[in-house]
Every structure is written in structure tokens, then in C-alpha cells.
Image (cartoon, rainbow, N blue to C red; front, top):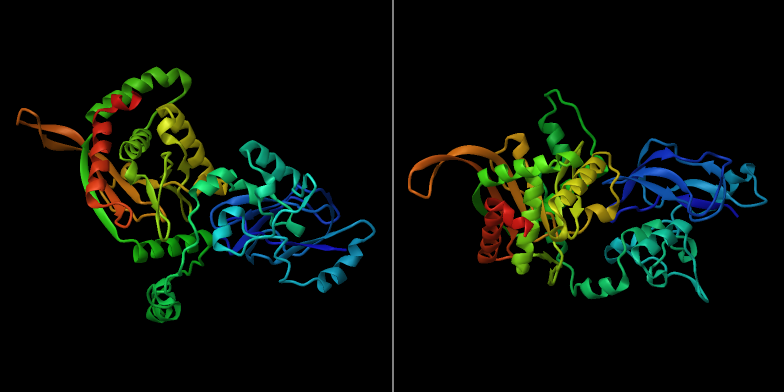
Length: 433
């Protein structure tokens, strides 16, 4: 019988998406694991794979269509013996809203969504697409422990892409929260209604800009952050002259390799080392507990058209400056074209937002939950300073502000983190030890 292909949930926050491009056409024969389409989520443009085999009998949603709700039928596959002429009848007979098994949220979002069907095991066999098997093998995942969101519990790409080995999940995952927050607190007013604002500006010329998925997500998460996270702020000035001279020396030696280190690369490394030196600051808020991370997984804000991404550099404390520089350039480039996979921009315990290259001298950044803190980095500016001998001199000074979640990090702990950070950046050669 004909099988409906539903709009998948390709990220934990995705409620709707844009069917950016079809990679198949009606009449094409497709195999399990074959890429069918490119779909724009709230954060990225992602490939969508087939979980069943058959012939594309009918495409129900044209490419370029925005606002397609998750679980909306987007195409129909027909099996052997059926023809394209059979499709309209089959599609009409199939329930439009029912089969959540065909498309569901990926494993990373299972805690916040109804759990998908468990994987079907027949003896030693697990039902999984070829692409899902390959990704699972690369990540060292046990497929018998992965919940499948495809038809009949089949494991698909989205199920394994954001998953981690079971041992790691068991060690890190918090128990379910005993009681949900009051509904009134979760739905606090976010400002005047659209109708009120439209009336207010009815006599003024304006252009109305509809919200896309990314902007909706940013608005929701930042509202949540400011309403629910008790922010406090710690500020320090950092003298950059030693770092600038050291950076110039390193870049001369790395020129033949095509590597050019930025000041931001040093900041990433310094933050990663400070999280290790002050391990209690390397933590996230988990509802009814705090999770203290062992690796330094540092997120860095990247501005893109219509919003921003925070790709995560995992195990940053172990990587060289040149490795961090190359990885950051790659993540930033792919972020700007929305080609990051969910596991590349989810997670981390700490974030960096650098507006110094835009001339901003200082600012306060909003914490990206569940992170414990975020560092706002300003521009390096030449300023008069008091030298060690008591005379007045000139130095390049960079102002930073640490926004801290007081539920996770207290004032003295945040100050200790900043102290270590300043020492690393003012004595940059120590970062190579």
C-alpha cells in the first residue's frame, strides 16, 4: 500500500520548516537511506532521508514552501504493483495527522517530547537505515539501545546523529524533574500583542517582516533566559600587548602552513583552560540539579543572516591554537550557510560572544540556557594605564563581561574564573604549556 512521507522533526525545537529543495521527482525509485529533500529547520538546512523503499508516486508539498508543520504529509511512496494513478486515492484514504512513527523528534529531544517507538529487534537484526548504521558505527553507538522514530520503530539518521553512547548518557542524564514549573510562570507576558502594536503604528509607514523559524526560536529562548535565569555580571579589563606580540610571532611561524591565529582563538583556548582550572564553573543548570562537565565544550556565537548560531568546540582544552582556529573557521563558514548538524550547535557549558571586531568596547550578553555563563568580549582599545613603576603609559586594553547564572555559579567562583582567564591572556605563552 502507499506510504505517506511526513515532514520530519529534524531538531529538538522544530515545529515547522521550509521544504527547501526536492532531490527526487515523481516516478523516481528510492531506496532506504537515500536523501529525498533538503529541509530548512529553525537552525539549519538539513538533508532528509528515506526510511522506506518504493517509487515516488506524488509530491504533495512543492519545494520552497515555508511553514510546513511537522508530521504534515509531503509526499507519497507507492510499492510494487501500484501505479502513480493509484496515489490520489491512497493519499486521501491515509490519515493525515496520525502516523507519528514516520517522523518524530530526534533522540536528543526525547526528554522533551513523546518517546518514539523502541527499535525492533529480530534475533540479531535491528531495523535501521543504511545511513543510520554508518553513523552509528562511526560514533560507536549500540543500535539496540537507540529508539527508532521511523515506521515500525526503524532507526533513521535523525535518531543517531545527536545520540551519544549509552554509557555516557547513563552517567550524564538527569532524572526526570519531579514537578513542572507553574504554567503562569512559564507563560509570562512578553510585551504588547501584535494587534496592539499594529494599532499603535497604524498611521506610520512600515514594512512587516514575518518571523522565520530561527527568529522565533531566538525570541523564545532569550525571553526564557531573561525571565528564568538570575543573571549577574562580573567585569574585567585585560591588557593585550603581550598577546598581540606573541600572536604576531606565532603567525609568522605558521604562515607557511596557511594558518593565521585570531585574538578570538586565544580567548577560546583561555576560556577552555580556565574551565579546567576552576572546574566548579564548568557546569550547566539541569532543572532540579547542576551538571558539572569534565571536558571544556565552548560555544562561540556566530552572526548569520536573520539570527545567530552558537557552534560548540568540544574538548577545547585538549586542542592546539591552530586546531581550534581551523575548527572555528569551518564551523563559522557552515553556520553562515546553515549547514551545521544539530550535534555541532547543541550542548556546551559556556559561551563566548565577541563584538570587538565590530568596534563595541563593552556589553552584557544573555546566557544561552542551560549554560552556566557567557563571556562578552569587547574591542581592544589603546588606553592610558598605570605601569608597574607608577608612571602613566599606554596599553591595548580589552574589556570583558562575564554573565553568570547565580543558580550555578556564585560571585566568588565567577571572580576566580575571570582571574585565571585574565592571567592566561596577559601571559599567553602559558597556554602552550
